[in-house]
Structure formats: structure tokens, C-alpha cells
Length: 112
View 1 (cartoon, helix red, strand yellow):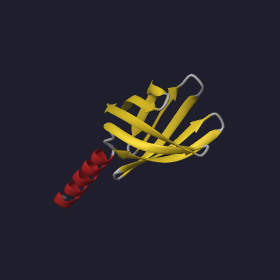
View 2 (cartoon, helix red, strand yellow):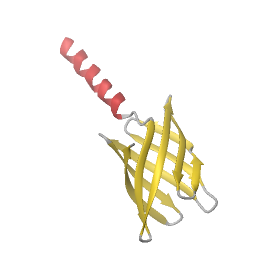
View 3 (cartoon, helix red, strand yellow):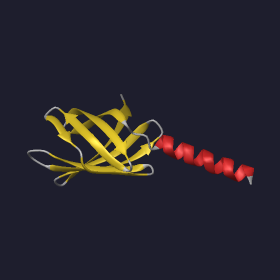
């Protein structure tokens, strides 16, 4: 019984640590032959993901942000596009899919 409780506690502790994406993360998105640096500033509270995404065209507030376990999603609205983000937390990086218009790009963000 003690071993089962210990294992459950360890699993919950690891899950809580893995899901901590609070803070700043950087990625480089390759699009049309250009490298675009993007900075994500995440804040998580009670399963809600807020913050901002900054790139060469400015900073945009995160909308409809959610985080469940090791997955997250949110969107931003720019002057040109609505951009949807879906991601998975993997150890020390975030694997992110960015969708805008008919385009979809995969990127990896690292904590900065």
C-alpha cells in the first residue's frame, strides 16, 4: 500500500512539473525561406493559459488558452491572420504546431 501511494505521488509530481510552462520560451519558425524568432510568454493558472506571443511584427495577446496535462492550445489575432497554436510539453522543450490560413508549421520552443 505504501509503495502504491509513493508511486502515485511521484507520478503526480512529475506530471505537475512537466506541465509547468510558465515563463518565456523562444522558437525559430522557418517560413518562405526566412527564419523568424518568436517569443512566447506564458502564464498558467487553474488550467487557463494566458500571456503573449511576440515576433517581428509586434506582440499579441493569447486568446482561448487551455492547458491539460502535457498539451496546450491557444490562438492570437493579427492584422492579417487568426493564428492557432497546439503544442505538447516534452521535457525541456515545447513541440508546437502553428496554423494560419492554409499553412501549418511545426516548431520547437526552448525555455529562455
